[in-house]
Length: 619
Image 1: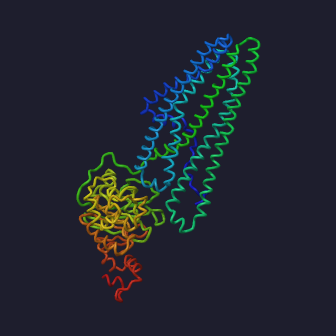
Image 2: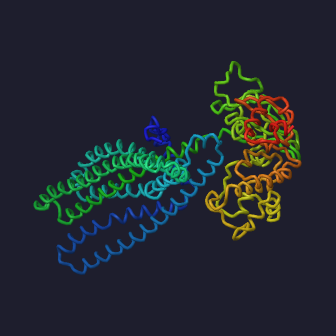
Image 3: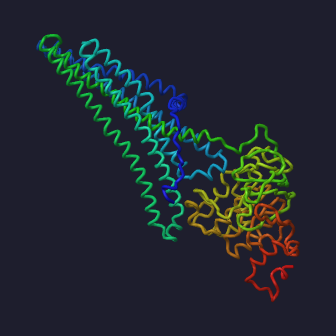
């Protein structure tokens, strides 16, 4: 994987949508309006307390120090100390409330994102790496959390403090106040320069964080292959390149920080120098008192503090905007496969599955265009399935065989509505599967894959998968597929903890657990996708016995490359380049000496059966 070839997974919007994004983010504050109101009241109190200190300093100098009144000076000092204590209490309460509010909002947002991810169609996950989606739920949500804890509400405190200081300064001496305010245009020039550069830097940083997460997830998950094929050096170089791009993006942001904050400090010092130069002359001339000059210097320093804080809030806003673009882009992604507004009622008992003139392409948009096949389509036009037409009656079994890429897995993906068909239809009990609620449809199906996925938890929880299945039923299902023996041999039996992806279990053991999982859920339709390809011969014989139990009174669809596993099904469909080329029983297809016979000969060409060919021996 080269960095240059990486897909632009986080395209930047052509226009800035800050205000709509900001309004949408504010919507997350509505459930927390009481906490926000309390924090707002404390912020107002904090803004008022920030004005007390310099004013008390002026009173102390002009009223008590100038007259040598030590008692009065002590009283002023006491009031100052009380104001500081009150400010500490108010700031603590405001910080605690806002942090609590931010955590609640972050919790709600992550829950919303995860719920939405589970509703999205499978095709979305085909195109979006896991690491990138993890970044949405983690890093991007953290950036938005900063906006709520340190930005959205506290910005009003900075504004109140700023306007309060401006009012007091104007009341003390309007000439010194205007002299201080004369520096403000320079501040806006610096801030506008910072704003233009910072947003793109934040976007770049988030983009490369997503790619780092995606790269790590992919390579750590496939570490055994990395080491087996000696890709350590190549992967290290690839990661270094991605990490370097993230470093460059961060350094770009740091450059703007490094220039902006010293510039703000310089403007603050410039304002103090102007006050000292002009105000000092006024004190010498008797135009203002020394206390007013000292208070002005203190207010000037405090005047730039909220301005600097507002700049920091702006930085937080920029980071939140960059992250919210991606979060809302994910949340606004519509699920292409959804339940209908009025769903058909599922039946019980045996199920009839039918594919009626189905055409399918992963690039074609889903639709309900009827059963008319597309006109003028060639075999090289991207259609994965072409005019698929077959039915499986209740209690019957059908096998799909053919070379890799023939379209077998696509057939079962359509049955489970992982994708919708653009032409034709798939029916269950004569009803288009798009007319069923997704929950009802998929509750009727059970899928056993070649690559078994186990979740963190116990053996029993991986069989149940959250369904209310009793312990007795779990054990009975495991016993039926001959998994009970090895489970009982584990340290804690069915309560044994399963490590990530079932690392402590063999491939065959994980496959047996997937069979037990399917049987425990008692599906109407059983789907096996190369389910016995990863087990040894002895285990396969046990599974063949279990399959007879699984197939009983159930509709079954089996995908297999090992033709020995499908000899006893009711019908075999031979797929080639997305079309059904042959159909019939095992013996019928061998007798035709067609494509199935060729596959059978190729698979058993190294075996000898008493001097006869495999086909003759089987016949």
